[in-house]
Amino acid sequence: MHHTVEMSVPSTATDETLRALEKLDGVLSLHVERGVGVKPEGDVITVHALNRSIDAVLATAAEAERHGPIAVVTGGLNSLVATGAQGAIDDDADESPWEEFERTLRHHGRLSVNYLLLMTIGGAIAVAGLLSPPVPQALALAASAVLAPAFEPLGELATALIRRSAYAIRRAVVSVVVGYVLLAVGGGLAFLVLRALGLASPSTIASSEGMHLVVDPTAADWLVAAGGAAAGLIIITSFREAVLAGALIALALVPAGGVLGMGVVARDGGLALQGLQRLGEDVALVVVLGGLVILGKDRLMHRGRRPLA
Image (cartoon, rainbow, N blue to C red):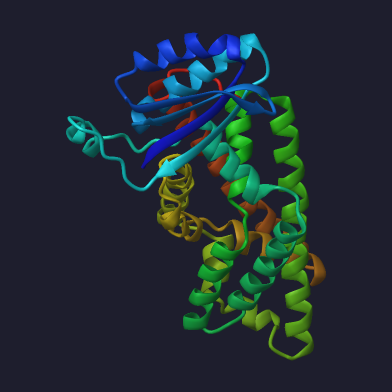
């Protein structure tokens, strides 16, 4: 994935910005339109660049802000052709800049009606799956993990902690708390419905293989969950969101939240504590291992560059 960057900069910053961009080997195409910027006022510079140079391009845009307000738009390019640069294009990096993967995490983990509904539905599906026979159980647990955006707010929290942004940490914590409460609510409501229909009983819970996987994980289960936690942030930061489902299914975030809700409405304190414990452990895996992934990429790939916003 290569990049296009369009930046609106003050006219007094244009020549300096162009000189800096021209020096970057990864900038393959550079255009400027002078005096066309209305909001903010100024000139518009369009850059087509290799992904390995995107941090340097955005750092140049940040320098232009010393002259006044700027606006920056980034986007991926499906293809990029430039005379004499095909080898560099073919070997381009696959890292997402801070601005893009943070926006992805914020979008999917933001407190919105859709986020809250999906968390509630995900919890309900997880509990329905846990109380089903093995084959539909596996399908339901996989579906709940993919449908409920339980991973993204935790990824946002891990990123915010590495950035040491109090604003971002506060937003992420609120999303996590509210979202996971509704995840448990969805699981509790599903259990009440199934119990009223005669489909949920202590024997059903005791015989559920998925339930044992959630509340009594083995060392192998922990290895799977840890791999999913780390892989999730690697995927999001490397333009591979299409395969994120694998990382989500490896974790027990959604079924554990459902078990918590089920234990509460069933007035089974032991079950509720087991669900809460597994949920807390998986949350810690995502925040800690995901944070290490972000920290490593910050040091090795982004060279400590702070995002524009």
